[in-house]
Length: 144
Image: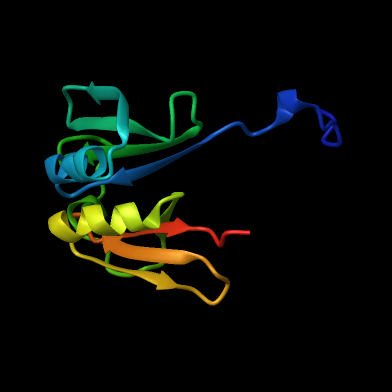
């Protein structure tokens, strides 16, 4: 067994990729890539009922990713929940920005959003939902 106390950077967890299995793949792809301006770094279609895109947050070289995926009924990984919308806020996606006013203005014309709302800890939150009902929060941290 490996030494769990080894703190060398070779053992670090390096990045994060979150997967959202969508009810409406095309609407979700447009939402994340055109409305939120996330850059597509990979697209796939296995020809067997699974397709998707992987997008990156931040500039080139960033290490946070989102996979937007569609899995149809004929795929062996299909689950009935993939056909539904999010029914609660047990999970949400929070995206940090340095320019909350830019996003509030941009979204005002193109998508329903609430805010920016000043939170008690000094950050500003802008609330919206993706096409599947997943709560998205774009936030700007309190300035020092």
